[in-house]
Image 1: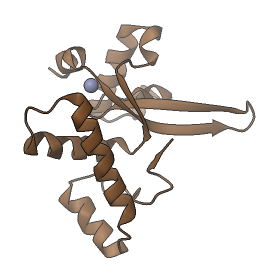
Image 2 (image 1 turned 90 degrees about the vertical axis):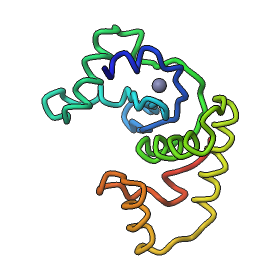
Image 3 (image 1 turned 90 degrees about the horizontal axis):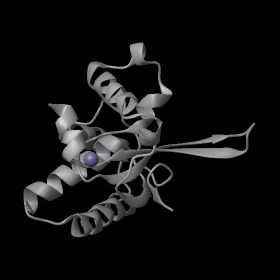
Image 4 (image 1 turned 180 degrees about the horizontal axis):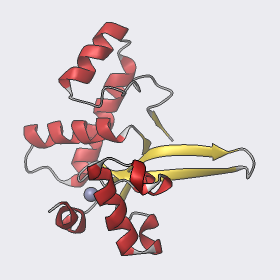
Length: 149
Ligand SMILES: [Zn+2]
Protein backbone atom coordinates (compact mmCIF):
# COMPACT_ATOMS: atom_id res chain seq x y z
CA UNK A 1 0.00 0.00 0.00
CA UNK A 2 0.96 3.55 -0.66
CA UNK A 3 0.55 4.48 3.01
CA UNK A 4 3.24 2.00 4.04
CA UNK A 5 5.53 3.46 1.43
CA UNK A 6 4.97 6.92 2.89
CA UNK A 7 5.59 5.60 6.42
CA UNK A 8 8.80 3.79 5.59
CA UNK A 9 10.25 6.50 3.36
CA UNK A 10 12.96 8.78 4.70
CA UNK A 11 11.78 11.77 2.73
CA UNK A 12 13.97 13.94 0.56
CA UNK A 13 12.04 17.17 0.19
CA UNK A 14 11.77 19.87 -2.44
CA UNK A 15 9.44 22.85 -2.38
CA UNK A 16 6.59 21.62 -4.53
CA UNK A 17 4.69 24.89 -4.36
CA UNK A 18 5.57 28.39 -3.23
CA UNK A 19 2.87 30.98 -2.86
CA UNK A 20 3.20 34.53 -1.76
CA UNK A 21 0.20 36.02 -0.01
CA UNK A 22 0.24 39.74 -0.74
CA UNK A 23 -2.37 40.53 1.85
CA UNK A 24 -0.59 38.80 4.66
CA UNK A 25 2.84 39.49 3.27
CA UNK A 26 3.76 35.90 3.90
CA UNK A 27 5.16 33.14 1.76
CA UNK A 28 3.74 29.67 2.03
CA UNK A 29 5.85 26.76 0.97
CA UNK A 30 4.63 23.25 0.39
CA UNK A 31 7.00 20.33 0.52
CA UNK A 32 7.02 17.18 -1.51
CA UNK A 33 9.19 14.09 -1.37
CA UNK A 34 11.05 13.16 -4.54
CA UNK A 35 11.23 9.53 -3.40
CA UNK A 36 7.67 8.57 -2.45
CA UNK A 37 5.81 11.53 -3.93
CA UNK A 38 4.14 12.58 -0.69
CA UNK A 39 3.20 16.21 -1.14
CA UNK A 40 1.59 18.38 1.49
CA UNK A 41 0.30 20.84 -1.09
CA UNK A 42 -2.69 18.48 -1.48
CA UNK A 43 -3.93 19.87 1.83
CA UNK A 44 -4.53 23.21 0.10
CA UNK A 45 -7.17 21.59 -2.11
CA UNK A 46 -10.67 20.41 -1.47
CA UNK A 47 -10.57 16.67 -1.16
CA UNK A 48 -13.41 16.07 -3.61
CA UNK A 49 -11.51 17.83 -6.40
CA UNK A 50 -8.45 15.66 -6.00
CA UNK A 51 -7.67 12.68 -8.23
CA UNK A 52 -7.71 9.30 -6.50
CA UNK A 53 -3.99 9.05 -5.70
CA UNK A 54 -3.92 12.58 -4.29
CA UNK A 55 -6.99 11.86 -2.18
CA UNK A 56 -5.12 8.94 -0.60
CA UNK A 57 -2.29 11.34 0.14
CA UNK A 58 -4.73 13.84 1.60
CA UNK A 59 -6.29 11.26 3.92
CA UNK A 60 -2.89 9.99 4.95
CA UNK A 61 -1.70 13.46 5.95
CA UNK A 62 -4.97 14.28 7.71
CA UNK A 63 -4.79 11.05 9.68
CA UNK A 64 -1.28 11.91 10.83
CA UNK A 65 -2.58 15.10 12.36
CA UNK A 66 -1.63 18.78 12.24
CA UNK A 67 2.04 18.22 13.05
CA UNK A 68 2.33 16.32 9.79
CA UNK A 69 1.42 19.40 7.78
CA UNK A 70 5.16 19.91 7.73
CA UNK A 71 6.88 16.91 6.31
CA UNK A 72 10.14 15.95 7.89
CA UNK A 73 13.10 14.65 6.01
CA UNK A 74 16.17 15.95 4.26
CA UNK A 75 15.49 19.48 2.99
CA UNK A 76 17.08 20.20 -0.35
CA UNK A 77 15.75 23.81 -0.32
CA UNK A 78 15.16 23.49 -4.03
CA UNK A 79 11.91 24.58 -5.62
CA UNK A 80 10.96 22.10 -8.28
CA UNK A 81 7.92 20.62 -9.90
CA UNK A 82 7.42 17.40 -7.95
CA UNK A 83 6.66 15.29 -11.04
CA UNK A 84 10.00 16.36 -12.45
CA UNK A 85 11.82 15.78 -9.16
CA UNK A 86 10.41 12.26 -8.84
CA UNK A 87 11.25 11.43 -12.41
CA UNK A 88 14.85 12.60 -12.03
CA UNK A 89 15.17 10.67 -8.77
CA UNK A 90 13.75 7.54 -10.38
CA UNK A 91 16.29 7.76 -13.19
CA UNK A 92 19.14 8.28 -10.73
CA UNK A 93 18.01 5.19 -8.80
CA UNK A 94 17.92 3.09 -11.97
CA UNK A 95 21.45 4.13 -12.87
CA UNK A 96 22.71 3.85 -9.28
CA UNK A 97 20.51 1.40 -7.34
CA UNK A 98 22.53 1.58 -4.13
CA UNK A 99 23.03 5.31 -4.01
CA UNK A 100 22.66 7.06 -0.66
CA UNK A 101 20.37 10.07 -0.25
CA UNK A 102 23.17 12.59 0.03
CA UNK A 103 24.80 11.54 -3.23
CA UNK A 104 21.42 11.24 -4.93
CA UNK A 105 20.66 14.86 -3.99
CA UNK A 106 23.95 15.95 -5.51
CA UNK A 107 23.10 14.13 -8.73
CA UNK A 108 19.65 15.64 -8.61
CA UNK A 109 21.08 19.15 -8.35
CA UNK A 110 23.43 18.44 -11.24
CA UNK A 111 20.52 17.23 -13.35
CA UNK A 112 18.55 20.39 -12.61
CA UNK A 113 21.54 22.58 -13.41
CA UNK A 114 21.83 20.76 -16.68
CA UNK A 115 18.16 21.25 -17.51
CA UNK A 116 18.40 24.95 -16.72
CA UNK A 117 21.58 25.51 -18.68
CA UNK A 118 20.25 23.95 -21.85
CA UNK A 119 18.04 26.38 -23.67
CA UNK A 120 15.56 24.06 -25.33
CA UNK A 121 12.99 24.77 -27.97
CA UNK A 122 9.31 24.34 -27.21
CA UNK A 123 9.22 21.35 -29.48
CA UNK A 124 11.95 19.65 -27.53
CA UNK A 125 10.27 20.55 -24.27
CA UNK A 126 7.15 18.77 -25.50
CA UNK A 127 9.05 15.65 -26.41
CA UNK A 128 10.86 15.73 -23.09
CA UNK A 129 7.55 15.89 -21.27
CA UNK A 130 6.49 12.79 -23.21
CA UNK A 131 9.76 11.00 -22.66
CA UNK A 132 9.66 11.57 -18.90
CA UNK A 133 5.96 10.69 -18.92
CA UNK A 134 5.09 13.81 -17.02
CA UNK A 135 1.64 15.25 -16.65
CA UNK A 136 0.64 16.85 -20.00
CA UNK A 137 -0.05 20.13 -18.19
CA UNK A 138 3.57 20.23 -17.09
CA UNK A 139 5.37 23.21 -18.63
CA UNK A 140 7.85 24.24 -15.97
CA UNK A 141 11.15 23.99 -17.72
CA UNK A 142 12.42 27.50 -17.36
CA UNK A 143 14.71 28.88 -14.69
CA UNK A 144 11.92 30.83 -13.08
CA UNK A 145 10.16 27.68 -12.00
CA UNK A 146 13.19 25.64 -11.17
CA UNK A 147 15.55 27.53 -8.95
CA UNK A 148 17.81 27.03 -5.99
CA UNK A 149 17.30 29.27 -2.99
ZN1 LIG B 1 9.19 10.15 0.87
